[in-house]
Length: 267
Image (cartoon, rainbow, N blue to C red; front, side, top):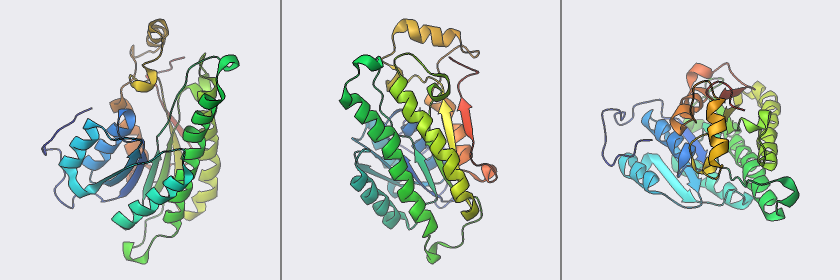
Protein backbone atom coordinates (compact mmCIF):
# COMPACT_ATOMS: atom_id res chain seq x y z
CA UNK A 1 0.00 0.00 0.00
CA UNK A 2 1.43 3.37 -0.91
CA UNK A 3 0.75 6.48 1.13
CA UNK A 4 1.88 9.73 -0.47
CA UNK A 5 1.37 13.31 0.53
CA UNK A 6 1.94 14.78 -2.92
CA UNK A 7 0.71 13.93 -6.41
CA UNK A 8 2.68 11.46 -8.50
CA UNK A 9 2.87 10.66 -12.17
CA UNK A 10 0.14 8.07 -11.61
CA UNK A 11 -2.44 10.67 -10.66
CA UNK A 12 -5.03 11.41 -13.35
CA UNK A 13 -5.26 14.95 -14.59
CA UNK A 14 -8.20 16.94 -13.26
CA UNK A 15 -11.36 15.50 -14.74
CA UNK A 16 -9.54 12.45 -16.12
CA UNK A 17 -10.92 8.93 -15.81
CA UNK A 18 -14.55 7.99 -16.14
CA UNK A 19 -15.42 9.95 -13.01
CA UNK A 20 -17.59 7.23 -11.48
CA UNK A 21 -18.79 7.65 -7.92
CA UNK A 22 -17.98 4.67 -5.72
CA UNK A 23 -19.04 3.99 -2.14
CA UNK A 24 -16.57 1.85 -0.17
CA UNK A 25 -17.21 0.69 3.38
CA UNK A 26 -14.34 0.24 5.81
CA UNK A 27 -11.94 2.42 3.84
CA UNK A 28 -9.52 3.57 6.53
CA UNK A 29 -7.09 0.65 6.60
CA UNK A 30 -6.20 -2.73 5.14
CA UNK A 31 -8.01 -3.85 2.03
CA UNK A 32 -10.53 -1.01 2.19
CA UNK A 33 -7.83 1.65 2.16
CA UNK A 34 -6.07 -0.05 -0.75
CA UNK A 35 -9.36 -0.12 -2.70
CA UNK A 36 -10.02 3.56 -2.00
CA UNK A 37 -6.52 4.43 -3.21
CA UNK A 38 -6.83 2.41 -6.44
CA UNK A 39 -10.23 3.87 -7.31
CA UNK A 40 -9.07 7.41 -6.68
CA UNK A 41 -6.06 6.80 -8.92
CA UNK A 42 -8.28 5.69 -11.79
CA UNK A 43 -10.33 8.88 -11.49
CA UNK A 44 -13.30 7.86 -9.32
CA UNK A 45 -14.82 10.07 -6.71
CA UNK A 46 -14.96 7.94 -3.58
CA UNK A 47 -17.15 8.11 -0.49
CA UNK A 48 -15.97 5.88 2.32
CA UNK A 49 -16.63 5.41 6.00
CA UNK A 50 -15.08 3.70 8.99
CA UNK A 51 -15.33 3.98 12.74
CA UNK A 52 -12.32 6.27 12.75
CA UNK A 53 -9.84 7.76 10.33
CA UNK A 54 -6.24 6.74 9.75
CA UNK A 55 -2.94 8.23 8.68
CA UNK A 56 -3.22 6.55 5.28
CA UNK A 57 -6.69 7.90 4.67
CA UNK A 58 -5.56 11.37 5.72
CA UNK A 59 -2.76 11.21 3.16
CA UNK A 60 -5.23 10.29 0.43
CA UNK A 61 -7.51 13.16 1.45
CA UNK A 62 -4.63 15.64 1.15
CA UNK A 63 -3.66 14.19 -2.20
CA UNK A 64 -7.08 13.94 -3.83
CA UNK A 65 -8.99 16.75 -2.17
CA UNK A 66 -12.71 16.91 -2.74
CA UNK A 67 -12.78 13.64 -4.73
CA UNK A 68 -12.65 11.79 -1.39
CA UNK A 69 -15.39 11.95 1.22
CA UNK A 70 -14.87 10.20 4.57
CA UNK A 71 -17.16 10.04 7.56
CA UNK A 72 -17.03 8.23 10.89
CA UNK A 73 -19.88 5.71 10.72
CA UNK A 74 -20.76 2.56 12.63
CA UNK A 75 -21.33 -0.10 9.96
CA UNK A 76 -23.80 -1.87 12.23
CA UNK A 77 -26.10 1.19 12.46
CA UNK A 78 -28.71 1.15 9.66
CA UNK A 79 -29.73 4.76 10.26
CA UNK A 80 -26.14 5.96 10.05
CA UNK A 81 -25.66 4.01 6.82
CA UNK A 82 -28.75 5.60 5.26
CA UNK A 83 -27.53 9.04 6.24
CA UNK A 84 -24.05 8.38 4.84
CA UNK A 85 -25.32 7.19 1.45
CA UNK A 86 -27.63 10.21 1.23
CA UNK A 87 -24.71 12.52 2.05
CA UNK A 88 -22.49 10.84 -0.55
CA UNK A 89 -25.17 11.24 -3.20
CA UNK A 90 -25.69 14.88 -2.25
CA UNK A 91 -21.94 15.52 -2.42
CA UNK A 92 -21.29 13.80 -5.76
CA UNK A 93 -24.70 13.92 -7.45
CA UNK A 94 -25.05 10.18 -8.02
CA UNK A 95 -23.64 6.78 -7.05
CA UNK A 96 -22.36 4.26 -9.61
CA UNK A 97 -20.68 1.52 -7.58
CA UNK A 98 -20.88 0.06 -4.09
CA UNK A 99 -18.06 -1.97 -2.51
CA UNK A 100 -19.25 -3.58 0.74
CA UNK A 101 -15.94 -4.28 2.44
CA UNK A 102 -16.35 -3.46 6.15
CA UNK A 103 -16.00 -6.48 8.41
CA UNK A 104 -15.09 -7.53 11.91
CA UNK A 105 -13.77 -10.91 12.99
CA UNK A 106 -13.72 -12.68 16.33
CA UNK A 107 -11.84 -15.95 16.50
CA UNK A 108 -12.88 -18.72 18.86
CA UNK A 109 -14.69 -22.02 19.05
CA UNK A 110 -18.43 -21.68 18.81
CA UNK A 111 -19.12 -23.37 22.15
CA UNK A 112 -17.42 -20.56 24.07
CA UNK A 113 -18.09 -17.59 21.79
CA UNK A 114 -19.91 -14.73 23.56
CA UNK A 115 -23.20 -13.45 22.19
CA UNK A 116 -21.63 -10.01 21.75
CA UNK A 117 -19.03 -11.35 19.30
CA UNK A 118 -21.68 -13.19 17.29
CA UNK A 119 -23.90 -10.11 17.19
CA UNK A 120 -21.00 -7.89 16.11
CA UNK A 121 -20.11 -10.10 13.15
CA UNK A 122 -23.73 -10.50 12.07
CA UNK A 123 -24.38 -6.79 12.50
CA UNK A 124 -21.38 -5.48 10.58
CA UNK A 125 -20.46 -8.20 8.10
CA UNK A 126 -23.91 -9.31 7.02
CA UNK A 127 -26.68 -6.93 8.02
CA UNK A 128 -24.52 -3.83 7.65
CA UNK A 129 -23.41 -4.86 4.17
CA UNK A 130 -26.96 -5.68 3.10
CA UNK A 131 -28.27 -2.33 4.35
CA UNK A 132 -25.45 -0.44 2.64
CA UNK A 133 -26.10 -2.21 -0.66
CA UNK A 134 -29.84 -1.58 -0.36
CA UNK A 135 -29.30 2.14 0.12
CA UNK A 136 -26.90 2.33 -2.83
CA UNK A 137 -29.24 0.30 -5.05
CA UNK A 138 -32.03 2.74 -4.29
CA UNK A 139 -29.77 5.49 -5.60
CA UNK A 140 -28.87 3.45 -8.69
CA UNK A 141 -32.55 3.08 -9.50
CA UNK A 142 -33.34 6.76 -8.86
CA UNK A 143 -30.44 8.20 -10.87
CA UNK A 144 -31.19 11.89 -11.52
CA UNK A 145 -31.73 12.96 -15.12
CA UNK A 146 -28.96 15.55 -14.74
CA UNK A 147 -26.44 12.73 -14.30
CA UNK A 148 -27.20 11.47 -17.81
CA UNK A 149 -28.10 7.97 -18.98
CA UNK A 150 -26.10 5.09 -17.53
CA UNK A 151 -24.79 2.48 -19.99
CA UNK A 152 -26.16 -1.03 -19.28
CA UNK A 153 -23.98 -2.88 -16.81
CA UNK A 154 -22.12 0.21 -15.65
CA UNK A 155 -23.68 0.25 -12.17
CA UNK A 156 -22.31 -2.44 -9.89
CA UNK A 157 -22.13 -3.91 -6.43
CA UNK A 158 -19.15 -5.86 -5.10
CA UNK A 159 -19.36 -7.59 -1.72
CA UNK A 160 -16.14 -8.73 -0.09
CA UNK A 161 -16.43 -12.31 1.09
CA UNK A 162 -13.62 -14.63 2.22
CA UNK A 163 -12.16 -17.95 1.25
CA UNK A 164 -13.38 -19.33 4.59
CA UNK A 165 -16.98 -19.02 3.32
CA UNK A 166 -16.35 -21.94 0.97
CA UNK A 167 -13.56 -23.85 2.71
CA UNK A 168 -14.00 -23.15 6.40
CA UNK A 169 -11.38 -22.66 9.09
CA UNK A 170 -11.31 -23.73 12.74
CA UNK A 171 -12.38 -20.93 15.05
CA UNK A 172 -13.98 -18.87 12.28
CA UNK A 173 -17.37 -20.58 11.95
CA UNK A 174 -19.46 -17.46 12.61
CA UNK A 175 -17.25 -15.25 10.45
CA UNK A 176 -17.53 -17.86 7.68
CA UNK A 177 -21.31 -17.89 8.05
CA UNK A 178 -21.52 -14.13 7.55
CA UNK A 179 -19.34 -14.29 4.45
CA UNK A 180 -21.22 -17.26 2.98
CA UNK A 181 -24.40 -15.27 3.54
CA UNK A 182 -22.96 -12.41 1.51
CA UNK A 183 -22.15 -14.72 -1.39
CA UNK A 184 -25.71 -16.05 -1.44
CA UNK A 185 -27.01 -12.51 -1.18
CA UNK A 186 -24.91 -11.44 -4.17
CA UNK A 187 -26.03 -14.36 -6.34
CA UNK A 188 -29.71 -13.77 -5.64
CA UNK A 189 -29.44 -10.00 -5.98
CA UNK A 190 -27.68 -10.33 -9.34
CA UNK A 191 -30.80 -12.02 -10.70
CA UNK A 192 -33.05 -9.41 -9.13
CA UNK A 193 -31.14 -6.44 -10.53
CA UNK A 194 -29.82 -7.83 -13.79
CA UNK A 195 -32.91 -6.72 -15.76
CA UNK A 196 -32.21 -3.18 -14.52
CA UNK A 197 -28.64 -3.28 -15.85
CA UNK A 198 -27.04 -3.49 -12.39
CA UNK A 199 -24.30 -6.07 -11.81
CA UNK A 200 -23.67 -7.79 -8.46
CA UNK A 201 -20.55 -9.84 -7.74
CA UNK A 202 -18.42 -11.04 -4.84
CA UNK A 203 -14.69 -11.21 -4.26
CA UNK A 204 -13.37 -13.90 -1.91
CA UNK A 205 -9.81 -13.13 -0.77
CA UNK A 206 -7.64 -15.76 0.83
CA UNK A 207 -5.93 -14.98 4.10
CA UNK A 208 -4.40 -11.52 3.83
CA UNK A 209 -1.59 -10.00 5.88
CA UNK A 210 -3.91 -7.45 7.51
CA UNK A 211 -5.22 -6.70 10.97
CA UNK A 212 -7.98 -9.30 10.53
CA UNK A 213 -5.39 -12.09 10.25
CA UNK A 214 -2.96 -10.73 12.82
CA UNK A 215 -4.59 -12.75 15.60
CA UNK A 216 -3.94 -16.08 13.88
CA UNK A 217 -1.39 -18.24 15.73
CA UNK A 218 2.01 -18.41 14.03
CA UNK A 219 1.57 -22.14 13.44
CA UNK A 220 -1.74 -21.60 11.62
CA UNK A 221 -0.28 -18.79 9.52
CA UNK A 222 2.66 -21.01 8.58
CA UNK A 223 0.28 -23.84 7.63
CA UNK A 224 -1.74 -21.51 5.38
CA UNK A 225 1.44 -20.38 3.65
CA UNK A 226 2.60 -23.98 3.10
CA UNK A 227 -0.72 -24.91 1.50
CA UNK A 228 -0.81 -21.90 -0.79
CA UNK A 229 0.77 -22.65 -4.19
CA UNK A 230 2.15 -19.10 -4.43
CA UNK A 231 3.78 -19.58 -1.04
CA UNK A 232 2.66 -16.55 0.97
CA UNK A 233 -0.24 -14.74 2.55
CA UNK A 234 -1.95 -12.27 0.29
CA UNK A 235 -1.59 -8.51 0.49
CA UNK A 236 -4.40 -5.97 -0.01
CA UNK A 237 -2.71 -5.00 -3.29
CA UNK A 238 -3.33 -8.54 -4.56
CA UNK A 239 -7.10 -8.08 -4.25
CA UNK A 240 -7.72 -4.50 -5.31
CA UNK A 241 -7.24 -5.34 -8.99
CA UNK A 242 -10.13 -7.79 -8.84
CA UNK A 243 -12.40 -5.20 -7.24
CA UNK A 244 -11.34 -2.52 -9.72
CA UNK A 245 -12.05 -4.95 -12.56
CA UNK A 246 -15.52 -5.86 -11.28
CA UNK A 247 -16.45 -2.18 -10.95
CA UNK A 248 -15.06 -1.33 -14.39
CA UNK A 249 -16.21 -1.43 -17.98
CA UNK A 250 -14.24 -4.60 -18.76
CA UNK A 251 -16.63 -6.53 -16.49
CA UNK A 252 -19.81 -5.13 -18.06
CA UNK A 253 -21.14 -8.63 -18.86
CA UNK A 254 -20.13 -10.26 -15.58
CA UNK A 255 -22.61 -10.70 -12.76
CA UNK A 256 -23.54 -13.24 -10.10
CA UNK A 257 -20.02 -14.63 -9.68
CA UNK A 258 -17.61 -15.00 -6.77
CA UNK A 259 -14.05 -14.26 -7.83
CA UNK A 260 -11.58 -16.06 -5.58
CA UNK A 261 -8.21 -14.39 -5.00
CA UNK A 262 -6.25 -16.73 -2.74
CA UNK A 263 -2.90 -17.52 -4.32
CA UNK A 264 -4.07 -20.85 -5.68
CA UNK A 265 -6.06 -22.63 -3.03
CA UNK A 266 -5.20 -22.01 0.64
CA UNK A 267 -7.19 -24.19 3.03
